[in-house]
Image 1 (spheres, one colour):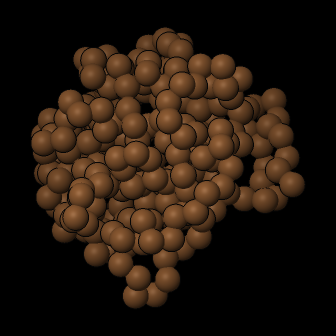
Image 2 (tube, one colour):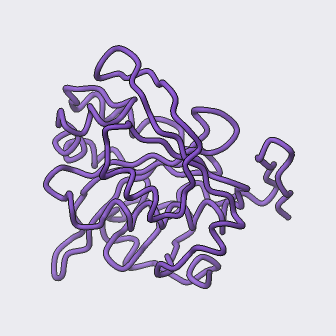
Length: 231
């Protein structure tokens, strides 16, 4: 049984959300990274325009950075995933990454980025909405936070489309600038999410990949319905 949240907005888990869930939307597959993803991840993330809009991404971004990201432990009640776009008659193509973790405190924070060549196609919004669904429906968080640089209007639009409410400005250390940058902060609680949610449901695959299984094709081959696609 899942224990409800305490006064800080967090809750303990006795029935944990799957540690490596795979989320699937109409156009996307969102799954945990494997070491074989490192070269493609390094190539996609090595972009000054991406790094300057994030607070924790280095630039240049090399193979060692990708391998370090993949080796990081994933949160038991969150996400540290790559985003893939489905392609008819082809394997899904890596287009970005998304996370839901506790790096800034007890309330889980959503983070995401999309490779520059895939901007302005609605992928960030679709992936963020899937992660929010996971956070409330399966991980059972009481609320989720998110932030973006004050200059990042595109990310702010994504955040607003997910129903997040503005809570104020703050300063955050930036790896790229080696200084602090101004950010806008937002939060979304489960009740507001339930009342505002209008997007299509997300499906999930629970559990880890089997030895020798192709990580690109696994979600399509093993996807099965659960509570998330009935939200």
